[in-house]
Length: 205
Image (cartoon, rainbow, N blue to C red; front, top):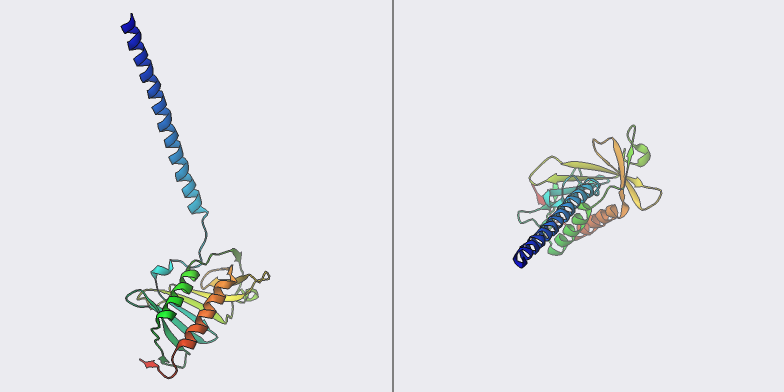
């Protein structure tokens, strides 16, 4: 009789453990399912970046500021340098491999690569009301070893909130806003790079 009871108890304990194991596995499966869906929702609703690719995939960035073209380029080691400044009528330009400037270029462009689109406006026409029809500032980005720009951005006026800036990607029908300090940073970089370039030491091609 006792043997029969002992066997019954063991079977009951096994059944309990099986039920508990099943519950634990079910809970773990539900948690994994929820995490996957949360990750997908996060990706779908994630931030929209201005640049089409990460800065690490770029080989050069140009800033055309009122007719003067400033080019920042990445060398074979991945280090950014200031390629120089020239106008359409000039063929001379400067290379200035300055370690301190290279670090500043890298930091500024890394920050620009994180620029997020704040708002988006559908625009009919040239977007003149936003200052992007005849911009004083144009930004062009290039993939490594590509001669044609990956994207071009017309930088327009400052939004009424004074914290945002209107931008239009060339070929896009919409105008977006980004944080104005990102443009201030680029203009500050241009001033610092131009000031660091030694006068009279131009390299002709």
